[in-house]
Image (cartoon, rainbow, N blue to C red):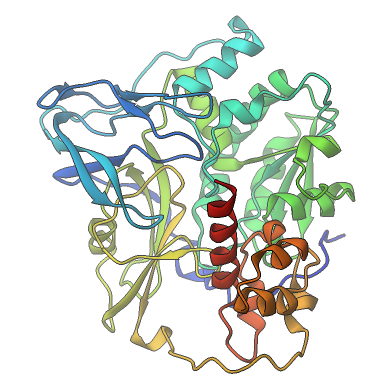
Length: 436
């Protein structure tokens, strides 16, 4: 068996055994739901309902507000309580639509299946837009916009990302095991729009049961090619998948279609299938809740559900909660408030107790070059860091800080415990301020 891989990367303790055998469970919604208007890359959605209006599951409550924007839909039936300034899982506070649940009116989404052949490619893209679908692997880029490939670009390789390389997280793994056929149906819709020459389904070799599950259906879909990848972080990153499968590198500042590639996460593919074939908007998603909780779980969660509600549903934390992370330990964001809500890009909630959150003293760089060896973008983190310390952000830019994908590998291997990714985020923010 040939394992595909890429240069660089790290091998952290993956801890996926905590939740990987936990089937997806639909969770009952809490009394209050908080739906931030900022849930995607681009311009926040714009509310279209008034305070005290009644809402239903899947009802559009905010519309797209520009070229790079998508609508927002209610994840529960209830009453709209108005806009609130609420903690956001990506940091700070942002406007959110607060909805009070009416448990008597909560229902499952049920629509007759529609024939995808009835729709043109442009109509499919419009359906995806109106369903509010964004990339569900974490980036949350509007999917309809990504499907609009420039006419001068040809997609040769459509890559379905089932790698899920972030430690602890198992939501995509469970989706493959439980909804493999829906993934294939979603890919067929993407094929209609993109007309690729080849289709690849990429999975790491620590998920052999998921690989076997995909193989069960592949005979019915002869266009499918399964690629098995070495378990290495960040194998699931878009550029690294493209490189390991096609041998091509996305140019600096370029996009995947510049090398004829298009990558989509398995969760996003299922959302596309549900929107096109069942008119279902994106109002719920699968979230892994893991770490030192009594019952690590994969939940099907109404978007807007507070983190603390899901942690409690997982049995609570043993050892005392020290940190809550939106996402995984490598690229996730530590939270200040436990009441932050699940958004469309929330892949997991990782809880850490005192035993798992070690305070380490930062030492000077010893020039060991470990960070250079593991960087999947071929950067020199130690050199970039030096100029950021001097607040010479232009020099950091020359050395490629804007190409940093913030995977966290450099900080993970640094023997001096220098928080390199945080420095690079800071530098990029300063460069963005100067640009504005």
